[in-house]
Length: 201
Image (tube, rainbow, N blue to C red; front, top):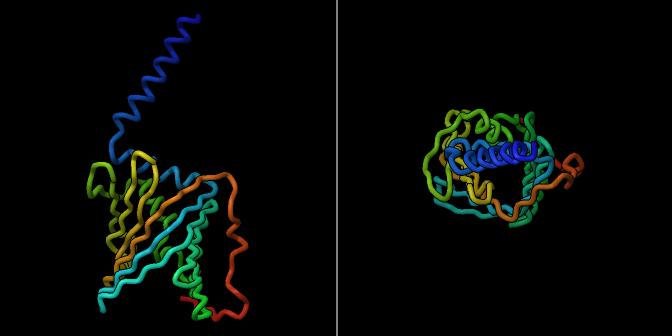
């Protein structure tokens, strides 16, 4: 009985090792996407770079990314306070300098939840292999193109999100200092001030 149990445990361990060692790049990407989708709360430091094609201008901003179930919040402190709060239905973009908020359809703009779900469904192609994997999504929507996600198999973390908008402007969001928790920032409480000008698109 004891010998049989030891053999069973050994077999399970070997299967797990085999799965980890011989998993394809595609399977690894899907596993990492599922990790982010399944975590209740996430916080990360973000650094965003916007490259504007028309005037060849570069703008940088930084702040924090938060996730609560299917909600995401990009909260920028530099160069000034802004936030992008989104779920599968809508996206709210608040600008403290303009004292304005824009509300758009959740499927018509950059949405990490939808992107990760597309990866989970295997709707992507691998651009490069090696220490850092890169998954690209085609036909995400009419407004965005060249959507790609880089992932680090060693840390099982996302490294960057990037996309190009309809005017050819490139946006790259780098993630660092990531924390996966069972509790965290309550995103339902985040909203724009009452005197904010609201525009719906």
